[in-house]
Image (tube, rainbow, N blue to C red; front, side, top):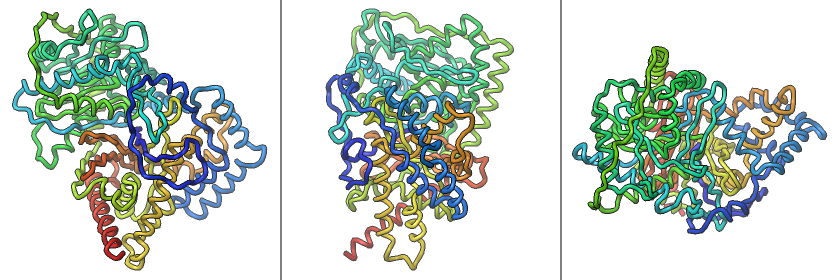
Length: 632
């Protein structure tokens, strides 16, 4: 999912523990990336014994002693010399030698394209940008214009996106894979009856030159380049967007876009039905091929300042339901900017082609671009009216739309979204105590969950594998024996002296696990690779993958991701499991933005309560460290 580029400066591929150095920033160097792309190392296959030992260690805080004994017996059988484990490992190593990245195709297939759940809320994250104080509709149109111009600039004008001349990112002196940056624009997910596909239309002799704009459920093609290849001026964009707005004031149109919010099997069937009609097929293709989509949203009901960001985060994730803006989307489109009349703004993106860093990079670029001076008048050249995309709605399509509306409304009512702007301190505080901000926040999440439930749970934190060619993500398993010891001690009066030491040890272990994850030595993806090999080569899965403990360890009640953005934004994503939470956080210098989601249909989860426990935990951890500092 949204991945944290955890910044540790260490040698690529190192397996044994080492001293973790101070966090390093990701830096950009303007040079052609393709040379570095070809020289990037391949993702390694970790040693089998190492992964299995670490897997067993990760189970210790989660299962009983009796279950652990049973799992160890299964693991001994799996690791028997000449046994199934060794055979799977050798097959995986052969795959690694023959492919550019043994994981990337499997990961996209297993995590995204094979999933039959709706992309809205379940896999597509939302991003809330700082509120724009717009005085009128013209203010909204000016904001949309500058946002569009900044994104078009990103696409072709200043960064020459399709010429592969983006600055190369480096971490600790090592180049990072830039491939995902070329998958975000001009791409779209295509539904299938059993498996989806992703098409990147920028890969070709004639990359797309238009975006799509949707207002009141009506889609338009807006050409953003002139016939000579030059981009439209800001003035031209403004005029064209005004034309679109004024020609789509009716709000009684069928929300064809809401079809894309449905379960993938249902949408796949509806899609095939929709594109039987030639006009519909041409309209759908125009949306799919566009560089990105701009959603001009209708105003929402006013809410209190306290609830504002909760509602806007929900709007970015799902649009608010069929009555509001859920039909004002094409959820399969990789990138959709969303701008409301009330100044709410942000985006949502379909997750299959890329992780978080390219999106964050684009957000930072657009926000910086929009801080420049207001529009400058330029000579106008008359332009044709943007093309309105037509859809012929048959009774069967109408029925599909009504079903999609009902399903989306159920999903909207089920998702609880809470944004916590923690203002007491930011990432500078843990750094002042020589602690990793990310590990510190992860321990606060562990403490909050433990206080709420009096137990720990499997926790997933996304980490980047971009040190390797075509690298996507690895999972850091944040729940450890050390984190559990810390959370138990925090509210135990008899452990007052040990608390700070236990926190420090838990953070140390988390940093070690982070280091191994970003250097290709994680547990999660290796186990996935062994399992995928078994599915392809064997008649049945090995017992270790059928073990109850394996299901328990893979049921991530806390699904978390750090979003390292320069922009003071809030990212949000839905929970991974029905009885879990989705948690994104953006640590700024002096505050931290959190977004917490949970399903209302689960009686055990409550996003508001967990947010309160999280705030209290962060404050208590600060107090603990300050007390220790005073005594030293």
